Amino acid sequence: MPQGEHDWLDSDAGPVVRPYAVTGGRAKPAAGAFDLVAFVVSRVDGSGEQNLLPEQRAILARTSEPVSVAELASHLDLALGVVRVLLGDLLQQGLIEMHEPEYDQSVGPQRPDDRILKAVVNGLRAL
Image 1 (cartoon, rainbow, N blue to C red):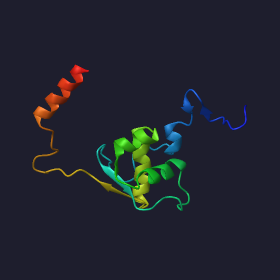
Image 2 (spheres, one colour):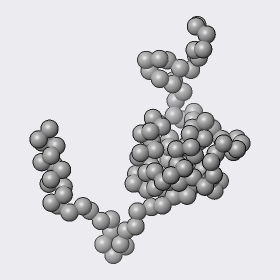
Image 3 (cartoon, one colour):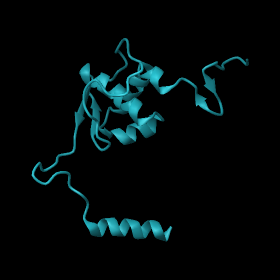
Image 4 (cartoon, rainbow, N blue to C red):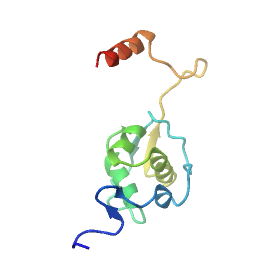
């Protein structure tokens, strides 16, 4: 094996550590539901935090400014389920804050105007 390469990294496939290894076999977050559009922001910089996984440190570094859960998963190139579990751990430790979108309880989640959805569909068809 050439110097600088690792057994756990395949240049074609990426890291071969399975998501359940990163989350300790958990599929659901310990705290929070983490909607895709929920914003997450760190309460600390993460550099001095001990006993954190590298993925958790990356989350703290990326959330110095508010970022949505979906964006976070994309930027870190991690599965959404893995990110949710890791976020749940960080939330439970008080290292992040989560801001869910506000919904009118009497109406439920607000949907975009039909005109906007039609414009998006027409734009996609034009591609």
